[in-house]
Amino acid sequence: MTNREPATDEDLLNAVGPAFGRLRRSSLLDVEDPIGQKDLSRTLVLRIVQEADRPEGREPGGGAREVTVGAVADHLGVDPSVASRMVSDCIASGYLVRAASQQDGRRTVLHLAPGGEELMGRFLRHQRAAFDQITADWSERERLDFARLMLKYVEAQDALRGKGR
Image (cartoon, rainbow, N blue to C red; front, side, top):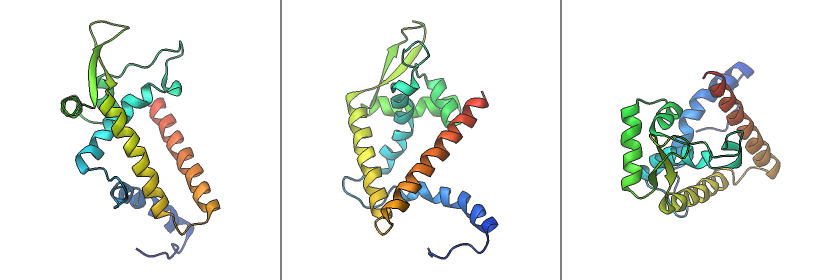
């Protein structure tokens, strides 16, 4: 990898897509308290459930959004059978629990188990350690600007995903 800037603004913009493709691999850097590949994949499912419990993930009436296997499939863009296997793996590993919906008793919803809360806490610390290691030679201004712009990008992506439904 080189620190050379792309030749033109167009080259710079064209380099963004491939750079995003490399980001996930960089999260496997050798940092303190590493996350195994299998648990790293499980965090994709756990994050969906975790975000539904946050205040910004709540329904207009204040209740938590209920996450089903179908919602996991939709969010990840995978077949329902794939999502079902992913969710079953998280349950078998002690990271998720199934419960009856409080809105519709015929539905089964997902909640983080204590083990899932612990894994997500470790994952957050792992992500921060990886960010700190990757950006160690950046100025504080560059690090904060990048963080702000990355969050802005993700929020815009989430907004576009919401419009498509």
